[in-house]
Amino acid sequence: MSLIASDHFRIVVGLGKSGMSLVRFLANRGVSFAVADTRESPPELATLRRDYPQVDVRCGELDVEFLCRADELYVSPGLALATPALQATAARGVKLSGDIELFARHAKAPIIAISGSNAKSTVTTLVGEMAAAAGKRVAVGGNLGTPALDLLSDDVELYVMELSSFQLETTDHLGAEVATVLNISEDHMDRYSGLPAYHLAKHRIFRGARQVVFNRQDALTRPLLGEGLPCWSFGLGVPDFKGFGLREENGEKYLAFEFQNLMPVRELKIRGAHNQANALAALALGHAVGLPFDAMLSALRTFAGLEHRCQWVRELDGVAWYNDSKATNVGAALAAIEGLGADIEGKLVLIAGGDGKGADFKDLRDPVAANCRAVVLLGRDRELIAQALGDGVPLVRVASLDEAVQQCRALAQPGDAVLLSPACASFDMFKNYEERGQLFARAVEDLA
Image (cartoon, rainbow, N blue to C red; front, side, top):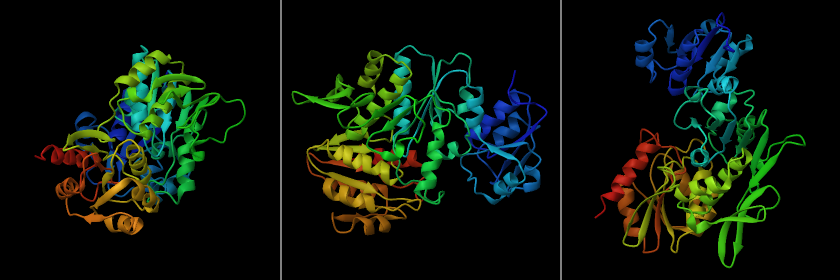
């Protein structure tokens, strides 16, 4: 029997990818609902009108009186709960919810829930591959790939879900088998009042969790939970009880669990210290749900990383080129700069800049000075980055990505790596980070 009473009326607010998954879910269960979107022409409007012509859809400014007809609003993660019309509706007793809350109510298999400022897509994908290698019928998605509600199936044995802070804002009780916040650094400061508000949104992932995984090197990832809940940890130091980390033996570095070496780091296809941390986080999550080590390590040995996430593009004249266009915030760029910088013989030539989303770039200054030969800056907030970096490293300003690639070729020396890791969103110049990464890779491939 459905957990949604069909005599109740719901409104889906936001008609993007997750909104359309809500439409399908509610329609399939015979629930009475309507759709609203602040945009005059939302992305899925044509699909909605073709497949569900009977559904009432209101586009443009949100009408509070219309919204108050609902018992519950399912709000798109792209729309801030601080939106005045949503606040006014909530003040009149209407519940604000989202697709992840609905997913959690209906999922019959255990959930591995993964959030963090950075690396969540890599770790989510990796855990999914580990589960598949262990023979599990696994469904992977959420903020990555397939929307959560489209994954629901009685055949699934394990869900591996990437969840953003925006999705977690409307999630009251996730009830994950194991949950983690991989790391916390400033992101989306154009939506949150500050780091504490962002931190609180991320930590909603731990509500109802049966086990937790935290990052020993980031105190903000440690949940404030009662005694007795199983806790596992990961970090780049030597691991202790219930910990995953790195051990060294005869000059060889190993991924390790507690006092046991698991595999040499050199066998990983993914490069950099940040990817070693990602591997350890994935091992901790998989171990928490009982995945065997042999299957997890087998998946690790073949995992080549995700597109646009510190992805190797090519080597030319002794210089390696990496596409890390997914680094849309300072924390992600720092992970790549420090992780790759420690893993190469020479220096980095960094391409950075774009839409900074209100971030403070000061934390880039020292790592850039230590790891970079030069920084090539482009995009709307390039001068803000230039001010933050100061005179610690040569700065070159360019007008386009093609020009940036040409400048990097002139600046890089054999043994160096060129790294596109913008520390910014892409919307000032590109459709999205994928387009930015694709255009970078194309420009690099076109170098003679």
